[in-house]
Length: 333
Image 1 (cartoon, rainbow, N blue to C red):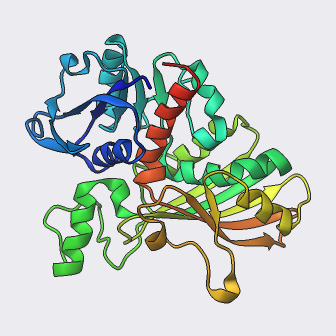
Image 2 (cartoon, rainbow, N blue to C red):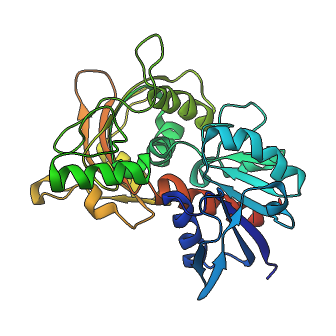
């Protein structure tokens, strides 16, 4: 099997470390791993396949020889550095919001729109974590029954905000305060309906991302979507309440059967036995869990779903590695 030189930018962050872990877990055909981070982190080492690999400082020369570059370094860095990596010969799979809505950049969830990878021009975007888990579950329903309107409310874990947010939650639980908070309010024993900045209409950027990214991934801009995104005091695993209004009639048996036969989805739907998805059970797993499947009788062809997934894995790192796997499968590299 051909092997590839894989760079990981932001390798010492929560998502970057998870990318390295998942490359090893999934036996990705890595020839050389090239961990890259800011000057502050360069000189550290990361364990990969029983070896300690030195972390390189972010500079153009770091990408020399890389075939694939997994990026988890934020929007500003991605905008500046992704073209440099592409110029060095790498295909960039970027986890930030920098490139997602660019017309010439495919936005990929492999279970949903893998064929769109073929249109890449050197950069492929990894969607927002909350978008990824939702579209894995709803895409087969959209293909069968066509979604007319979608309402989503999220309950997002602090790991989605990085190490600083994790420390804030841990400090507040332990001592009641944090000396260096990641959020404008206390997160322990609280919910904050504020993820990213707000626009002039009062929507957060996270909410806007979910709307626009879902339409792009499903390639259907006629779907009416509204979102409310909330940060909750959960360490890992995002949860979503999703309400769908379909154009076509359906039976719950059809919905459950479709979801049970969708790659990457696990149905947990037995309210009588208290079986339903929870973030604590989704941690360290790559699947999207769906439950609380029930009709919404207030609209024609209405449906409610509860969707949970590990935001660092399927919501970020695993999805990026799966994109890289599809590049190989589709002979795009």
